[in-house]
Image (cartoon, rainbow, N blue to C red; front, side, top):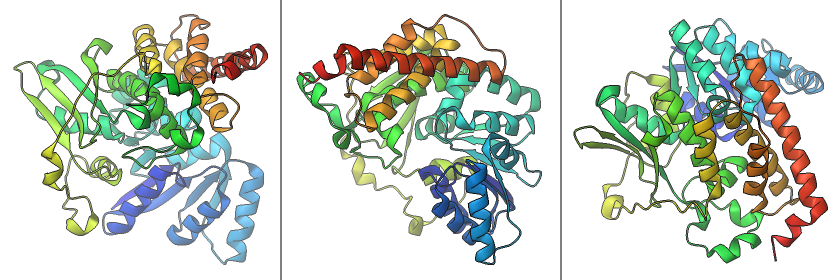
Length: 401
């Protein structure tokens, strides 16, 4: 039985992982959980799963959780907090597999520690690969640790790559739904609201990743992640818009053959694939993971419009430079998306902020996780300064006409 650690247990990936564990109790058990500030959710997870170790964001939240557990008569759950606590969750000796699903770079240190400890990691957090992919890959090779993508597109590529060797691959194709604004006239982009941007046409995801899908920055991060996971230059990682979202990605081989991975749009499938690799297990029709072949009646593919989606262009530019520019891309986006969700800036200010931060970022390549975190903080400070400039100059207001 595999003992699972979940970094980001109260988020959508964490909850999907727990759903899989519930469906296969003979195969999986919960060893440790790392959450943020959702005290009610992590308390219920402690009540249901009785993990050995739980981490929350702060010491104050840890004290509150301990009090609630004691009042409920729940014993045997150690509660820790902060980055050190998350690292302990990822490196607990009993853990056999780590699901890394904390949004942003917050889970980077714990993911790195898990790799150093020789724990196989399921990566649902693309930001870790974007910011520190070279370091994580190097460490994984040193410790002979598996890094298995949970992101649906990279998981699809991983499955297709089993059909041939790396030297037989010509290029890979990451599919994108195109988000909710694929056909919206460009003149209306300045008036896009938070509510509109959060209405993804096919996937049910967290708030930041949904906004990133609407700007296609999410696909840009995936390009960088794919380069690192599969040892490919950016020129061999292509993006195609596929609004049906039934083909999750494709691998094109040097003989002209193309393998595509097709499945339902349900994150439990790539999570299960990573948790059971190299096995495949029978999910049965009752799990809802079977695919209705009639959905293949129409498959559309089209080139992404970089004028409509400048964030994708910026991601390719960052991928070409690597290092600090990839870190800055992600950091600036996190800051800008947070400001957009708060109603402080307009939709078009997201790519404006990212581009300004990239232009202000000197070229460098971090050697350690601490280097990565320092570059991340510097980029965030620059992003906040750029947002202040937007507010002072009125650029944000004039972007809506």
